[in-house]
Length: 406
Image (cartoon, rainbow, N blue to C red):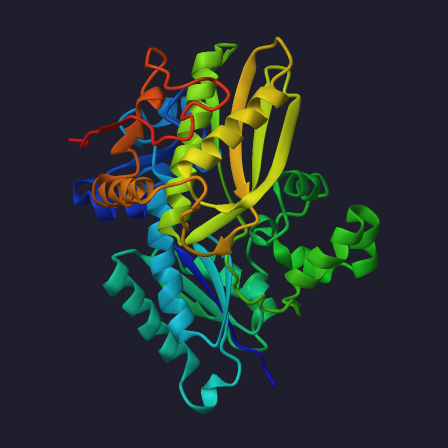
């Protein structure tokens, strides 16, 4: 049976999320990413792209190319929540769904033409997503994942495209070789050095020649250029970890600043767990020094989503890991081994008062934003430290400061 594979991609996803929150951003050049000079661009609107701005570009260069753009640091929690809205719709409508990333999805509609016109069905599904989420989305449809993904790219922005069975090679032939998945910048440069820029030249080459030049990956590229891809749709499953990282504007040895950052990340990730009805059993801390040497340490713990458990564990790992008197460039926290479940009261440790406090905090965060309620010792370097360093909360709920962003 001929396969029917669809590829959905949310257009300029982070930018679209920000525009959904603030309609005044529509039609203006918008850049989302690290706002410091050492940050990088996570996403840019089409208006900003016309100035040469693109993802992964250093923010400093983006500011030079597009000084009049609106720069937004972004909020991973917000983007994750909006992505989940789209995921839920697709799970309802597609027999098999693969979530390739926060803004990219594959679906297998094979056999559905007996009951629906697959392209018509997908067009209606796309309209439903835009109507219910307010997010622009494009899709490509073909007999395989590679051609569908390329078709989505050609359909953008905010459009759709179908490549009929048997037309895959003809569709791909005039395109740039860098539009083929797995052809990165280094591989593209290598192709250019060989005088090859378009897919049609690869289609004419013997596969053995591609393997001799590019190794095992050469056969994969040759097959994809010829519209051959038998890779299956991998059934969507929930993520197994969440993480947060901070790259400092200037490398630092300030232990107060470092612990403030670690605490704030652990606190926010704990909230993300509770909001997603998740529990974690693995805590990991990462440090990258100014010489780019990177170290990490992890520990297993009983399943939990409680700040007053996770923050001390995170700080404990940091204290064990931080043993070099060198400037630090980056710190990170990851909670792994995720499973479904609500945070339960530990009768030997917690009280109902503590659980009620978490509920109140989470309600405020859901209504006013992830950072609307924060611990006093995450508000800045001069903030008051609560408890001792080994266990800053000493088994008790922390002092909190609530504020609403204007």
